[in-house]
Amino acid sequence: MPPTDRPLSRRRLLTAGGTVLLGLGTPVASVAVSEPVPTPEEVVNAGPMVMALTFDDGPSPQYTPRVLDRLRDHRVRATFFVCGDNVVRYPAVVRRIVREGHVLGNHTWSHPRLDGLAPADVRGQIQRAQDAITRISGHRPVLFRAPYGQFTDSALALCAELGLRPISWSVDPKDWTNPGAGTIAERVLAGAAGGAIVLNHDGVEGGDDNPQPGTGADRSQTVAALNAYLPRLIAAGYRFTTPDRHPPATRRRASRSQAWG
Ligand SMILES: [Zn+2]
Image (tube, rainbow, N blue to C red; front, side, top):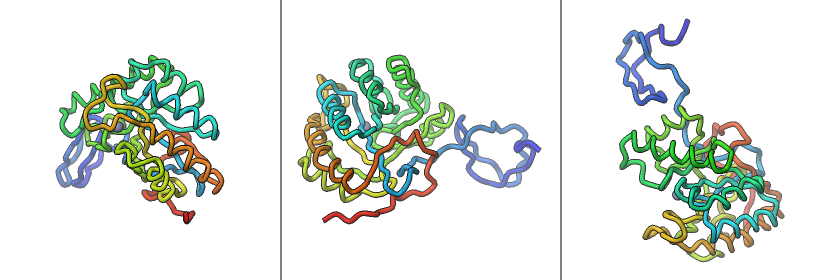
């Protein structure tokens, strides 16, 4: 029996087309059956000593190449959640990210707060970025991160429609506040755990030449911190992956397996 033939109890049914509130016991004649709306993933489901590094808001011609150099030195693959407007500004950097084996994720077109946008504008932000990243990199993103982690209902519904997995994080060293490379490294090491997803920033909203106020446009501490924490994590036995390589995690928390002195 197709699922649309049977009555559904009262619940909030989220579909890719939006939110549908169903009455108690109401026979449902025509409800669009679509992909269930995903939950933002805070961990990566890849084994007890595997983590994921992510870099947001780029690409940046100034900082992304330096991040890529360090990732290459340590043979680490990462995910770059890029903004569409920076992708079209700096296409050569985008192509280098892909050429060196990293993964691109969708971080909207221009990094707005999604809770202040109409659903049509959320769609425009995500779709426009998706199209630009695909056109310039040759790869269609399958991962999405909302600016400021604001995974609104309309953004999550659109993720389901577009085949995007919403990726959150479990470790936030607040690198964009420039607390010092040592502090960034300490915070990453403190959060290191199997499944941990680390939030970093290699890029600048509005581009390197036109940084938006309050975004902390200097990413050199983020770059320097990599040299401080990557060797220690690798020596401790951690490996690094990208979320697209693994099925979505059902657990919400990373499992701590290392105490750092
Ligand atoms: Zn961001």
